[in-house]
Length: 198
Length: 199
Image 1: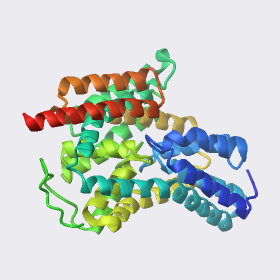
Image 2 (image 1 turned 180 degrees about the vertical axis):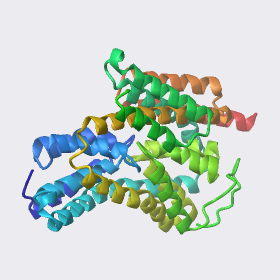
Image 3 (image 1 turned 30 degrees about the vertical axis):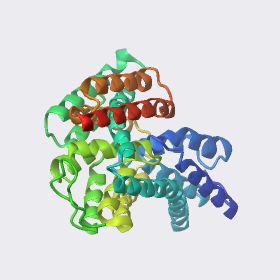
């Protein structure tokens, strides 16, 4: 697809990601529904397919999940430049899109994190700081287990999806009990998927 | 802020040697982290490099989780900032983001036409199921750190079970759970810490 972005449009793209940054409690992925509303439904700068494949690709590639934001910036820029076929000018705009979205989503939360955690570390013997860390510990651990559970439970059809559940369960056991390299496990999962067994 | 004495309880065995060490370590860590970096972070920083003990990791992770922004990014900023101030934080952050960004963009350009094929979809599905297991396994491993929690294992298990039901089964919004259960647990934790100090 091809779109036209004015300087003001780039500005509002930047501002939108800045405003989302501090709302991303529990990871950048929690802002995905709002990004969809803004980029796909409202401005039509991104197609629905581009949105979905950006998330899938970021999940499949190494690095933090927030990479999906970079991919969306890339695709918006690419659309503004007339697609990959348009050559280097489109790639330059795509990189510009990556910069706008990533810097936008990063600056507010990183600044807050840096300032807050430096303060907390200097005051680590304060009762409030200790109590916060101690009290939150069981909650965040349960959150991790719940995330694993939610990602598994995502497959709606037990009769067809049970091999995925088995794979998730087996992975949990293997990682917990052995030192198997994680890449081997991921590669194995990819292989099973590619062969169509799960 | 370099050379912080490792005085406080159960200190970690090692520390990052330099900003370059931070940058390189986080780059390698990010490049191993398919479907999220958390599992690798725990293995690398706690088990292998021993920059953090398991207890410290859980504490830092709690903070990284509650602050806005990607958890792993927050953890990198904390660790970098603790040892080398703002330049350390930037070194860890750029290590975590630069190489993966370059890689994911190359990947996007390369698979532009392939991503919708059944094989590619199958691979993503298989890797998704594995990464769900990776995340759950880290959670189970971290439970070991609760043994030293002043609130006691039983209370921790209760709070954990409550959280799991709220998020995993009832699918309540994360903010509700953190803002209601978090302060309650912290107040109780403060009470337990005070009691332990006077005992």
